[in-house]
Length: 172
Image 1 (cartoon, rainbow, N blue to C red):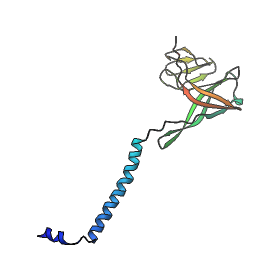
Image 2 (tube, one colour):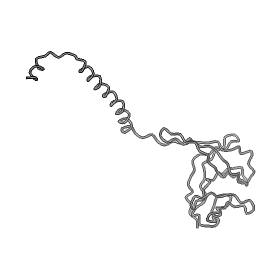
Image 3 (spheres, rainbow, N blue to C red):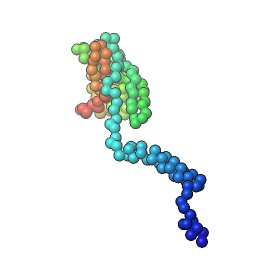
Image 4 (cartoon, rainbow, N blue to C red):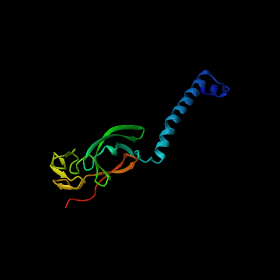
């Protein structure tokens, strides 16, 4: 009996129906606001990871030939929406012909930090006694390959560093 009374009443906008419509509409808007970015993220192709191409490292006019210098610089890395800036180093050597070489700061054996030993004119990794010549080649020790090098270019008197290139040559 109750259901037949409801069927005969004309559909009128009541306060209850109005609030139901507002709540359902608000839920639809919130759902769309959450779903659209998620669907766009899942369906769009990933953007390639891009680091800044070249970073100014030092002024080469201050470098002495065949005297390695550890140079510090700031490098930014973008990971999604997060930009991280960190301090990095490179060993820079101005050769006798005025060309410049920049080595990565880690030993190629286990990634330890090495240093330049002025008295011996060698790079020395104190952890496992790997020795490297001024041109980065392995002299002795467990290091399996020469020191990794940064891509370099010179703009005026400024040394610009690019990506770190892994050395591929094996120790004999």
